[in-house]
Image (cartoon, rainbow, N blue to C red; front, side, top):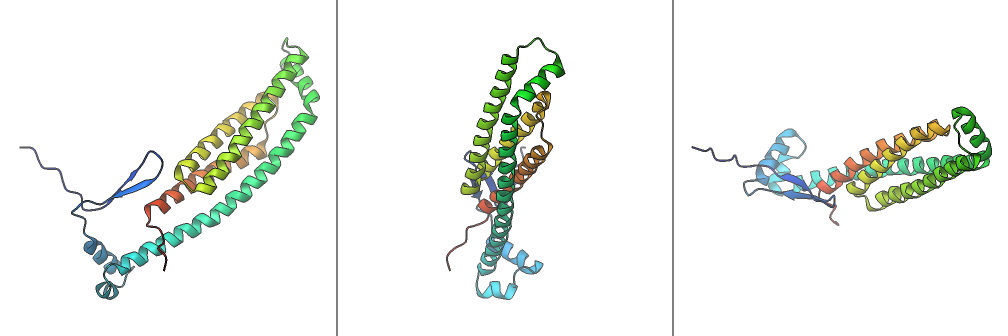
Length: 212
């Protein structure tokens, strides 16, 4: 005889394709049981919960939302400062790249001793420069879009785009254009993007602040 599936007694959370979070509560879910557990754990005053049913849970939810939102705001400022610093170094890097273009082409031909004309080598360097500019434009557009929308999906895209930039910067070592400082800053931005993705997902899981 087939055993009946075990009923769920707690809420579950589902992630939609657009990155939003949906809460599903089974009909057996009891808010009174949750209130009693929280009261015994010391987070909510049990006597206050009896006088005002549901007020303790609402207070806890508001407190958690405020804490996560405060943490996100602080780290968002750090990411903004990080992106501004990274942009400054990338502009300086691009200026030096263009100024030393001729010297870099000569070093490139001498390093690999390929049977490549100087014109072809210059074409390679300019193509790499254009691709780098295009990548940087997309990088900062995605970064500021993620900070503006505060959506986990956008931060995931920003993290993946940062990872592409890290790998691309490593490949630039073949033409002697690897920059350790920019590599470190992009890696730090990738880590922060993953961290903020988790924080924004937590904000979606918690109920929004209701006006007093």
